[in-house]
Length: 181
Image: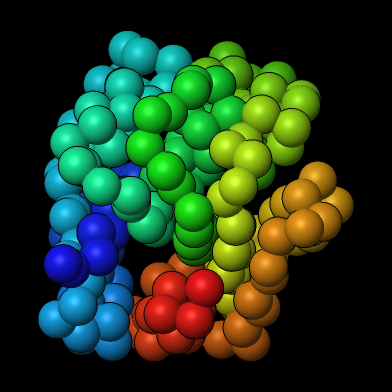
């Protein structure tokens, strides 16, 4: 039986198209023993979380077995929000988060994206978290990784010198961690 992976896209007008290259890279590196589901999330500008949290819940609900979660950028932060605010029935053993923003500030638009203060305690207990971030990311500041490192000391952190926000469209390292964990 093939292992199931759900890949949650990043934001922006071309987020789905841009992240398709990440999905292709991951699928090629994982091989035929893994099946990646890559749904296109729709953005609702009127919703505080752009309507993504509900869509993430629906997508996870479509899996029949345990699921490996991979998410990029806005999708990664909203996946964390979903996991820290909802109880899930599926076993989620491994969560791989790429270029994950840590939302802060008082602007009204950011309030629906923020994690609860105690989010680290609310995440699924038996899940392993992996964070990946490039030092030259121009979209999500690299220092966001340090915030997650402080709040989630048990997670695994992978820092890359270069690759930008799209990690050079090369997820070979992520695939290696998926296979090893």
